[in-house]
Image (cartoon, one colour):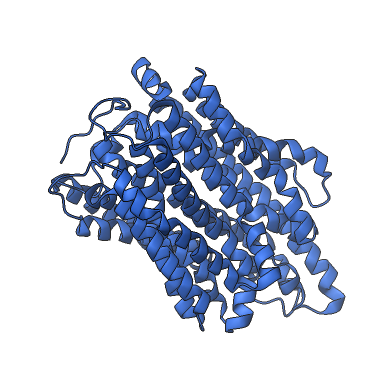
Length: 526
């Protein structure tokens, strides 16, 4: 296995010569445009599901896979693309990703049935993984020193804006032109990005892993492990968390990951150089976005459902309320980059970011169906600030800790931790919410004939749909049944919030421990 340094190499002569200013600007704009498309799709496609279901006459399960196929494919292939970028070159990997994504989005526009759309979304997820891994490594190759910090602050800002405002942008497109334009816009933007690829190829002199081959076995094992894990989490409420099916999936995940580690140790050019994982500082930085996934992304995904289902707010008002959570992403990544450039400790900002995520989770416990929004404005802003403070620091800090020829692999691992943890966190939240709602309604639901299976009702309520199950009971019992479901949803929401806060606290302690010591402190703050 190739040796892995733990020291930043920024500014050393071993790296490639940077292209001119105009070409660097072109590369930055192209990467940021492509990067904006991916998180916009991750968070915004869900808005189109009701319209897709109606237009294509899709059932619930295949309709859900319009979103799930993209997320799972993205999470499973990000690490592989990072390694591939080191072998074939970062520009080529980025261009391949943009091409695959654009082609898959075009198929999505033309899809006449939901199965074809699911397949296209999975291909788009594979292309999105290449865009993120290749684009991150490409920026790390082209920019150095303070410029790298500013560039990754922009990267974090654009990605955060895409995640935060994806639902609003998709909603506007659907209302004005129809759901197919959600994907058509992706085609147009990525076509513009691909026009810049010839200039990018001429401008970038890349470092590559000489003599290496794509690690097909390692890639297949990692994909299998991710599939087993995400399936186990998603099926927990239906099969039972202690049932043989779910426990078997989790056990299978551990076994496959163990086999993956054994295979990678014996590879001369592995998909994942395990010395990266043993780099304490690098792993600490990679855990920061994991905390953001549990503390921020889960709220971004599910808080609107709480506001509409339990709080009774219309969707437009819920979207406006969510601005208190997302607004910090508009300014703070660039602000933190400037502070670090002026000598403020990056480690200190990262610690503050994680602490705010914990505090925000605790503060959001104030939510209740008839809450005065003024009381929860502060914890929403705190949570958004906690996520935004580190958003522009993580990539630059992490990639400064690895050798240039391993930048693609490192970027792939970082983005796997980031996007993989988002998929896992959202799945964990949804599964726990449904489980707790089921426990709170199982006894009471027996008093409402026609309500249906408790587990099915719990899953529907967890998705934010209370009116559907309530409509199944007699009209004279509807008000009482609705109250039961609202109180169950509200109680489950608060229970899951405590779990999320606990996870963020554990990650805070772990990151502090990994970054402790004088050597780690000097390197990560540089």
